[in-house]
Image (cartoon, rainbow, N blue to C red):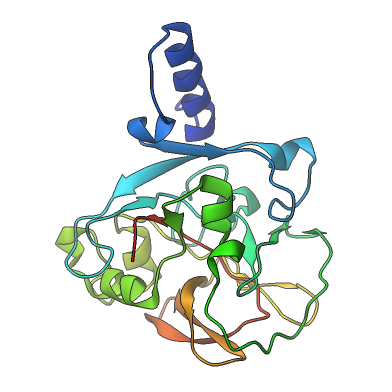
Length: 239
């Protein structure tokens, strides 16, 4: 049986330690990891304490096309099996704009409890609140809207979406899927298995951040309510 990347990556790490090989980071092997971080991780229970993520190298034209990206959503424990995978562990964690706190929705329960249902703040996503940077360290960060647009518009043969829909997103280098989002009113889970919704680090206006989304019909960037919880896909490198 094929093992999940989470189990496999732990085995790889243990093997390297036993062989006393020097590595500055398991990122050298195509993985990055983090433990529990207060104010970011949903909870300090065992399920949320450790994450190991595979990474992929982009190769498409435009911003972000020469950078390393997470191959899964931040907080995910495994890759999605399809574009409409509705598994909570594959969806990963959700974030409100310019907030470091992550949320996890099992499908029936939200962790931690929802506290903010409105955000009106004239700022981009600030580095001190960037969950990619806080969990993975510099130079990991949220992508810019221009990087997400370049990915969406990049040719399929180069690993981009070719301006396609959720199927194109899943078949791309980043293998994005329909993880849904959390509604601003109470953190209710919406549209998991139907559409994907991802934050960029830029703001649209004081109440809306730049976001990227896709569904069965198509894809695009848009100004999304900052108080909604959306997925995050981290990128490594300076702007």
